[in-house]
Amino acid sequence: MEPAGEGDAVKVTQALGWYYPESLGGTEVYVDALAHRLRENDVEVTVVAPDPGGKAARAYRHHQIEVWRYPTAAVPNRREAQGRQAVRGAELFHRWLAQERPDIVHFHTFVTGLGLDEVAAARDAGARVVVTTHSSSLGFLCQRGTLMQWGEVACDGVRTRPDCTACELHHRGLPRPLARLLSRLPSAGSRLLADLPGALGGALGMGAHIDHNRQRQARLAELVDRFVVLTEFARGALAATGFPPEKLELNRLGMSQRDVERKAGPAAAPTQRPIRLGYLGRLDPIKGVEELVRAAATLPRELDFELELCGPPAGEAPIRRRLRELAGGDRRIRFADPIPAQQAPERLARYDLLCCPSRCAEGGPTVAIEAHAVGTPVLGTDLGGLAELIRDGIDGRLVPPADVPALRRALHETLEEPHSTLDRWRAALPPARTLDQVTTDYLHLYRQVLP
Image 1: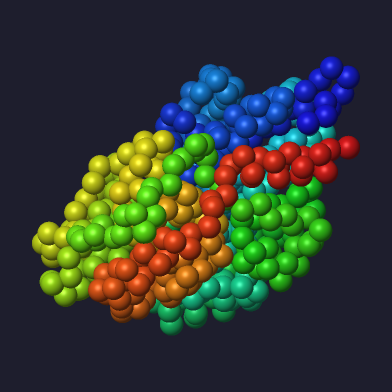
Image 2 (image 1 turned 90 degrees about the vertical axis):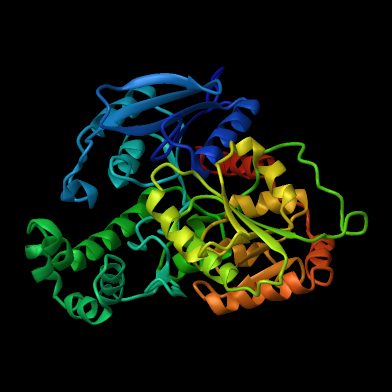
């Protein structure tokens, strides 16, 4: 990039909700890879993230990238969690911004301690602001965080306050009739009741919180220079809600690994039995793992396949127990220990089919792009990034979300006729998008927003 001033490199701060070494997820991998590629292009990069419960601000290096962490409240109160009150500790980041004066602050997640107040602080420090939305919340648009109405059907983002209130209350465990009833509470009444203690205040104040989210989303649209989305679906949903189209930018996900080799094609190595199905990622119900296990466990016993579920065990003991119960002792379904991110391509190459039955409108997932890179087709749900990555019946399969019978039928057809499904899909897989391409697009974007 061109220097920001005479003899000065452009200073870009990458801000996200969690970071290494305490956290390892898709966004962290994305930011780490992006930071290295930006540095290769003479951009000065610092990664900043809150440190809930930390004792003091700390600086360290991770993979040769400067990281700065600021302590925030270990247990935020309700007003802090809802963005109605400044989060204790976040003022340290505001001071850091005023002192360091980065040219661009690039936000990747909004969490308690990294939100709208911090976007405003970045602008006050003279920085340009870029936001990349990695979650289905699309900023503050969807409180449920999935952009799925009732968790079942894709939401276009254009919903009334009662609709969104009822959907979130249902997400928190209320039956639909009760959720709809409480959603009719007028805004003024909901604001008065929002500070009642416990779950009652949370439920009665949900309408006021949805109102507040809409105000925050409008303010976010004013403050940002660019709002980067990962899918056309997300761009359409935001535009439909009135987000300024000229501030919306599409930059699809790409895989971070370089020099990944594609395995031998179907002509040289046709699919053999047992057919190897794989799931690689968090064992989270929102990822559709329960539906996947249900579908696989009810497939005819004569179908010769292996399903491997590879995900981190820490903090996921309840869902693992649930999945084992759903498997019902089916020896075709097994659990594998997690693997480092750099080993993902090798593991994906072993699979004949990667299963991504997500129940939310994801921007990726990146693992599906990595599967394409090594020559493994993907079965996913007809939502978000998966719907834009997979060509149904051409290089993979798409099924409705949370639809166990449809998922079971798709698996059955694939396992019965692997040469007319899997091998045909393998031959049609396109080249995978890379983080190098993603970075090139960001460099162009940064040049656009800099004065």
